[in-house]
Image (cartoon, rainbow, N blue to C red; front, side, top):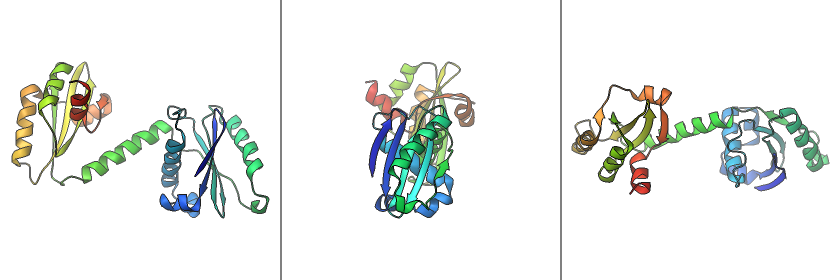
Length: 230
């Protein structure tokens, strides 16, 4: 995979057949599952955008020229989509192989980068959940201040679950997802008991937090708090 920056808003990436194979993508997929292809393009963007100039820009467009050797991918973050595509076309014409003029450009108007990252994070969390035992217990604890949560983080080590920290209406909420052979697993019960000593169980549900709360730490909130707030 080779990358060339055309200007501050446009990147050209040459992707070979071997690169496509590594990602499980074929040229024919470009005409099929756009969500799969979109995820592939954004993964390429994550890899080549080493200066992180594109990650906070939702107006990202992709234009692709398939070839027998793979494909040419042009990525633009210009907020003026028309101008961005015009620059891409001008650059693309310079690199197009005259023997491959029968190939046609494919334009993609993906979900915003923000929407993609939210979907990717959700998929990542689902994979992490599947790595544990299927039995699950979810508990939400409320803390009146951040320091109390940090105190809990120093002693509660989750080896069988995930933890998220939210801020909602001025209070901190810790959602823990615990995995065990059954809900009466001693380890699960002990961890809930420890958390109950520092926070109180609340009627605020995980759905409310997910919809209206601010996610401060995802997946490993307890571990992150131990690391950064010693």
